[in-house]
Length: 292
Image (tube, rainbow, N blue to C red; front, side):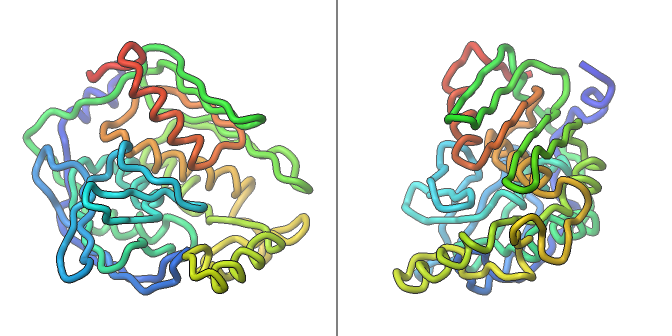
């Protein structure tokens, strides 16, 4: 184990609570979110006000439910919380193990499509250590999942790092790799925005309004990076923004493991479904990991 791991051996929570409001990417509905400190051992738990009561949904991988273009969790009583990936990625990068997240709608706000507002709120709230040991999931052997040209594998390492590749028509191959730390997350990954091609987004939005399904209703030029032909309208936020956003989502999905990860991930053209397939393949094989 390296020095960084030894110096960060305890669990933590936020020092102060904060509240943010916005609209969901898929529902388009207004939502207010309050993120508060929690005791050691709580983990990350969503509390959704719904049907005159408050339902709890732990942020854990086995509650994942397939929904279009996002990560969603379905609680034991049927309560749905969707588009949790950007907030979960920020929890992971900032080393926050325990918190409660209260929201008054089913979908977290998308803001500008990035995790920058979450990062700013976490920085202002601060981080408080707790008197409890922090256990990490250490990968013991390589686990891989594939879906055609898409592939994702995780292998042993004494740190958490990702190498990602994404190829988009008219853009070519885009790559990013590095250790996932608070600093690298804030500077390289958090600014990257959710993205999509206009030729697919417009029909999907029309389909959503006709059928009543919550798909991309909140998507617009302020909430996503819209791709038209060989360019992002308004320009990219730095080089290779789309692959950096896929890695941002991957960090958030892996946070649903419930422990910090020690492993190196290689991702080619991955998305939420493949991310969760890797988590399931890893955790269902007790010989592939251990808590340390």
